Image (tube, rainbow, N blue to C red):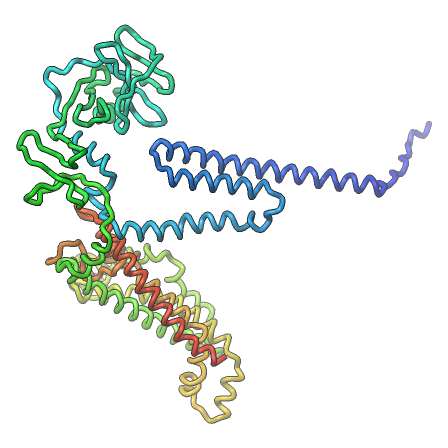
Amino acid sequence: MTDTTTTTEPQTPPTKRQRQAASIAESASQRIGWMLLKILLLAVVDAVALYAAFVLFTHQEWLVLALVVAVAVLVNYIYFSRKRVAAKYLTPGIIFLILFQVFTLLYTGYIGFTNYGTGHNGSKDQAVSALMASAQERVEDSPTFPVTVVEQFGTLGLLVTDPDGDVSVGTNEQPLQEVDGAEMDGDRAVSVDGWESLTFAQVLARSSEVEKLSVDFSDDPNDGAIRTPDGQSGFLYVSTLEYDEAAGTMTDARSGTVYSDNGTGAFTAEDGEQLLPGWQITVGFDNFVRAVTDSSIRGPLISVTLWTFAFALISVATTFFLGLLLAIVFNNTRMRFRNGYRILLILPYAFPAFLSALVWAGMMNESFGFLNQVVFGGASIPWLTDPVLAKVSVLIVNLWLGFPYMFLVCMGALQGIPEEVNEAGVMDGANPWQIFRQIKLPLLLVTVAPLLISSFAFNFNNFNLIYMLTGGGPRFTDVSIPVGHTDILISMVYKVAFTGQTRDYGLASAFTILIFVVVAAISIISFRKTKALEELN
């Protein structure tokens, strides 16, 4: 037999130049990968910015459009530059900070100085258009205009052919404008460049939107508007209100009543009657003045403010002292099963607060709640409907939700105090109470005091608990705004802004500014006072 065994020659190790070439190639491939990822992310950002710019251009929001373009250009410059390394890390955070914090605060402050709310949501031109449209009636001898329903970027419009054969297109916001090059089907224009024509089936599917189309015949709202009941034929509708832009008046053609623009953000008659909707204007400090001078607002505002301070202070005090007491008890090394007890104590903190509040609301139900039916043997205790008991219930539930946090904080702070401090107190003849009150508690407050301040600020705006447990009730019966006995300032702001038939965003923003000032002032003063504790270190 022949030996077919083959021997492999040993491979020579790569030279230094080969290793350098491989390293350069690997580095280049990584840079290309990061470059492609960067280009992809910037493409997404630029696409969003381009869409936003187009929408803003359509609505003629020039200032915001300029800001969007400027930010997009700046972001591209930073991330395509090789030198702006620090800016590449700071830019996303700064943009989100400005967008979600600074802008929100500034816009809320701006709204507080306006009459923005129900009936005053838009501009004067929008209010005029809405008023004219709401009073439109079909002209009896109006010619029939062949129309085609068209769409552009989600906005419906009408492609109108007048009896002379001229073709125009318009939307609810843009009056009819003549267009050229429309495709005709007999005496009807059926399509035009830049617009998508809807089929008959699509018109039927969106019939409610089509019926709301009211396209102004011209720039003068007194000339009427074209409306269509079926998406095929349009008719001229003229408003019974006549608008005089030069005089700033709106006249009811039926009654002859003249409504004037007297600077209140609505057309107002001599007897004080207003035509709504109005428009948004700047009212200065009127909302702040109304908040403290209007008797229907001042009364509940004082009650709610007092309760808000009491709720925040009592909540902080009760949760802190209960948490501290439990921390002292379970910090004793001689106690068995300490870890198991600790886990049980922090369970309320582990569950979502809003869910726990809902559970407590069910247990405190007067008719079928667990407390009344099981614990108190079928009693009918109005935990959430009696003004006093409702406040007590809120404090009890907040104590249940808040003490685990204070327990954890105090436990950590106590374990951070050196044992030598306790031994020194014992050697000086101090008893356990004196050691705790004069040594441990001041050292504990050094750590806990800032957290107590933040806890006060949190409870001052603890909207979730109030909203989920009592809804702010029971409600006051003699006030004009929908607030109740357990409402705090932030829930009162929510109700002024988002509940009821009339929503006053301007007044709600004014309340928000006042809350911000109060909390900020208390926090600043408290932090300055706590500096004295730092000397204990």
